[in-house]
Image (tube, rainbow, N blue to C red; front, side, top):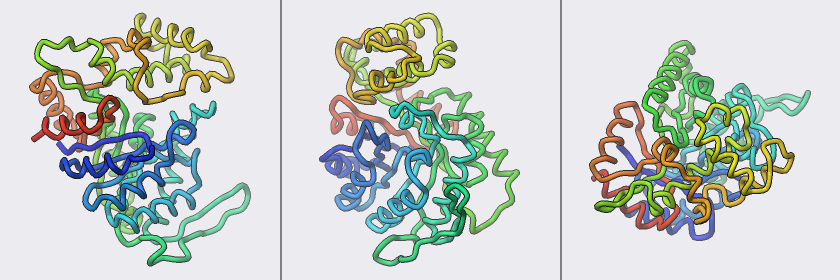
Length: 355
């Protein structure tokens, strides 16, 4: 299985991209969460100039965050700096919108956005609408300004389950998901994508790239001999994933109701600890600071073993290889980890694990 890294945009991110390339990792991604992290286009511009081989991804942008012309311009500009190395993840803006106190957009809008980006980034015109005004747009300059000749890979975030997978199938894109290690769920997503693709008339000019790879974002902790799999080091390495799920549950009562008693209690403790409620209009300002950052020691008790096992990869070398092999057999092409404790060391562990 291929491997890659995803991080939050910050000054010096290009140094991590260089190290990832030196380690032989396949891709280096940056989140697009505007009010929490830095800007991915700025960060990946630095990474593009500092590297020569590694693929560079945005995970993920959304029509609820950026207009199609602006996003396409950023992507095609990156493609001019790193020809043929750009990956664009697109989604409904689930977390990025929630950090603004808003809700994600729809699958239909996501599909229109994806189609527009594919067209524009391939140098074609596309329909653009604002209110009642609609017309065709395209890049009016090419060459040194943007690169529409080399293909950009697109992947759809699978947070909507079959709906997102169907969008991916109709648009000929890959899939990306966050913390989804359930093999049955991945089989269902791939089946939904295949079904939608088979039901869609093939247009050789409709898609930017023929790639349709699947990516999963998780965290990885390689246990030392006799180390507690649920001890503080393991909780620190995986806690950002667990806290992201608890924050989502705290912000989404309908989802929280589907959790077990222990997980539901963790959601209630999180809300109490942050001094908010699941219906407070400003709850996003309390729940999402330091989102996907290293957890505070006082929050380790919220990192439940059940959620660690569901969202992250923790185990011995043999344990991890077994789980990764199972993911690969379920159709996952690339494993992306987000390192939060010591990124260079964690990236080196990932590279060594699969060699």
